[in-house]
Amino acid sequence: MGRSAGSRLGAVVVVALTALPTYFTGEPAEKIVERLPGVSRRLIHDHEDAAQTAFAGMEIAGGLALLGLLVTARAVQVPRWIVAGMLVVTAVTVGLMAWTANRGGQIRHPEIRTGQAAAARTGESGTAAAARPAASQD
Image (tube, rainbow, N blue to C red; front, side, top):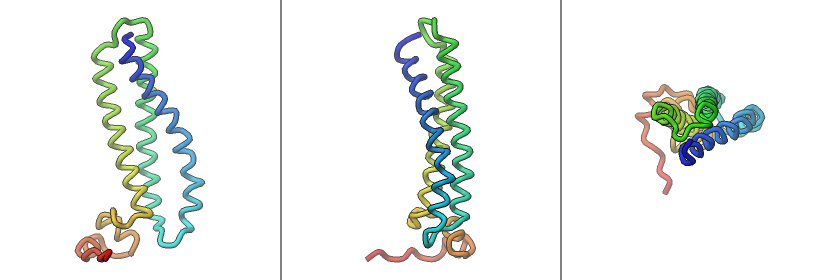
């Protein structure tokens, strides 16, 4: 197997392994954050749902990368279909991780909330929250 492709597959496996402690520290963090003033349980739940999906995607990517490493261990070159498949899976996973991070950021950063997320915090309808002008920071 080529060093470059093998290194990339190995990197995906390592990232999948590092996602384990990140994911499993979510529940203890939730217990702390939900007690903070101005924190919406709905936003925490939305982040948790996104995290479950992103975690599953990351572990699938890691499993496929490990499988790719095992299948091509003695190969001179990694087949293009493995490289293409990993590109698609990791691109989707990066998107899921970004979506999860955005959901997590909405918990403590109201400036990045959409109309629906802002409504979850304030109890307004999504349309009313989106129509309300943003408060000036001056």
